[in-house]
Image (cartoon, rainbow, N blue to C red; front, side):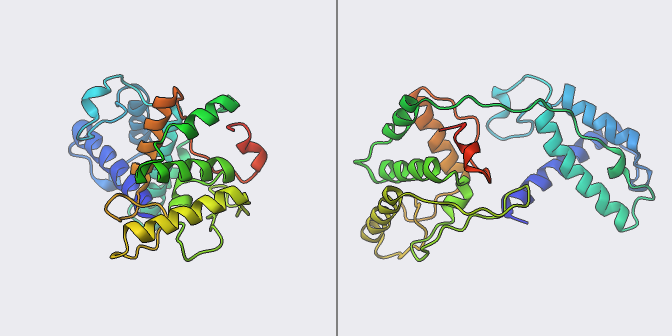
Length: 248
């Protein structure tokens, strides 16, 4: 399990534990029922705030009720936990089998216009290291449809980008244009000049030579999107390149 996934599981468990402590303080683990779980799911749909418990974002988001899609993310984590408890003999009933996901309308995203793509690519200041790095990352994401984490895992010692198995279980072959490959080579060369004393293997780095993280990269893309007047709804990662064309 990846560290980010593990962190998500831990935070989702904490939310459940806090709700149970507040509403059923004397409840024992073996007394947990489907009714408790369904009430917690209803709580997420109607009462929980988006950044509940977040150290900096909680005060800025007071609207109650998570979206069905977000609740489904929490529910999948919860079902995994409940299944483990049943398999280990802590629960006599497989509660996970009785908890259903919320119905979610198909998520359709309008295509980017050519001008919007150009605006987003023009947003980073390429005269600065971080701006050029962001430009290369933007270009790579648009060109290949990779997820951010897949792009960030690229090293200057690899000749092939490893596209991890997608969530639907399908592996992907990801083509890359000559232009993108040239930009990656240029960024790797700049890294060797900027951080000669560190010899980093990753291609996408911070000013101090440390690897760029998912959250940092996503925030940079969001800021460039704001500058370009574009709201980014999703990070790419589809097995079929025709799906990517919905975005670009």
